[in-house]
Image (cartoon, helix red, strand yellow):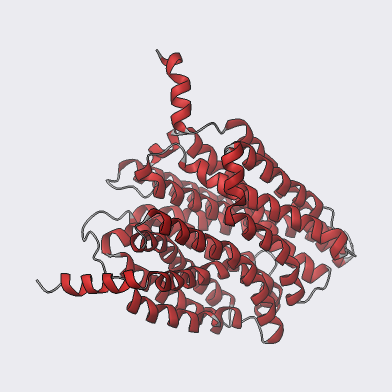
Length: 487
C-alpha cells in the first residue's frame, strides 16, 4: 500500500524538472558516445605504452563494440522487466567502474577486459535512455524537441570525443581519456536518483540471455581468429578451429532465436525486405567506417607524425558535418527524396572519401591529402545514417519500431567489429610483406593502410549499390501498389 506514493511523488518531481532530467540523460549518453571516438586518438600512445601489436591493438576498440552490440537488445529488455531508471543506474555504475579499471590498466589483457565491461554498461545505458525520455515527455511537441536534443548530443559527442582525446593525451596521458568518466558518472548517478521517476518494471517475463551470450561469443571468436590469422596462419588448425567454433555458436544463436519464447532478435523481422536490406547495408558500411576511423588515426600519427591533439583537430570537420546533418538536414532530404536515394548518395560520397585515403602518401599534407577525404566521409555519413535507420523501421508496425532500430544498431556495431578486425589484419599483412621485402618502414605502413582503405571503399560501394537497388518505398505504399498483382 505504501509503494505507489513515493513513485507518484517522484514522477511529479521528474515532470516538473523534465528538461533538467533530459540534461542528465544526455550526459549519460554523452559518456557512452565519447568512448566510441575518444579512444581512437590515443591508440598510438596505448600501443607504445602497453606494447600492443598493430593487429592486437584492434581489441581496444573491438572489445567495446562486441559487448555493446551483443547486449544492446538485452539491455532494453532488462529495462522493461526491472524498471528503466533502476537499469539505467546499474548501467552507469558498471560503465563508470569499468572506466576506472581502464584508466588504471597496466597490461593488455586488463585493458581489453575492462573495455569489454565498458561496452556492457554502455549497451544497457543506451538501450534504456530513450525509453526514459519517452516516459518523461508524453506531449508530442515536447517529445520531438527532447529527441532532437538527444540526437544532437549523440551526434555532436563524436566531435567532443576527438578533441578531448587529443587534449588529454597530449597534456596528461592516455589513462585520462577513461578517468574523465569518473566525475561525470558520479554526477549522473546522483542526479538520476534525484530527478528521474522510480517507476517499476513489468516484474516478470523471459530474458534471452542465451541468445545474447552465443552471438557475442561467436563474434568474439571470429574476431580473435581474424586478428591472429596473420601470425598463426590462415589455414592453421587454430585459425580454422576458432572460425569453426564461431560458426557453430552462430548456428546455435539462430536455433535459439527460432525457438525461444521472447527472442532477442526475432528472425521473422528479416522476412521484411527493407529490414533485411538495411541491416546488410549497416554491416557493410560499419565495417568500412570503424576501420577508417581506427586506421586513419594511426596513419596520421605514425606516418604523418601528428600529435594526438592534431589528430583530434583533423577529425573535427567530419564530426561537425555529421552533427549538423543530425539536426534536421538529413530528415529534410528524406522527406523530399525518400530513404533510398539519400542513403545511396551518402554512401557513395563516403566511398569516394575512402578512395582518397587509399592514395594518401607518406609525405601527405593536411589540406591536400587528409581534409578532402574527411569532408566527404563526414558529409556521406551525415546524409546516409538517418535514412538507414528509417529504412530499417519502414516495414514494421509502430509497436516494433524500437526493436527494429535496436536490431540495426546491433548489426552496425557487430559489422564494425568484424570489419575492423578484417581490415586491420589486412593492413598488418601488407605492411609485414613490404618490410620483409626490405621496404622503407613508413612506406610499408602507408601501403598497409592503403589496401585497407581500398577494401573499405569496396564495402562502402557495395552498401551504396545494395541500398540503391533493393530498398523500396515504405510498406504501406508498396502494399497498395502490389495489391492488383496479388489478386
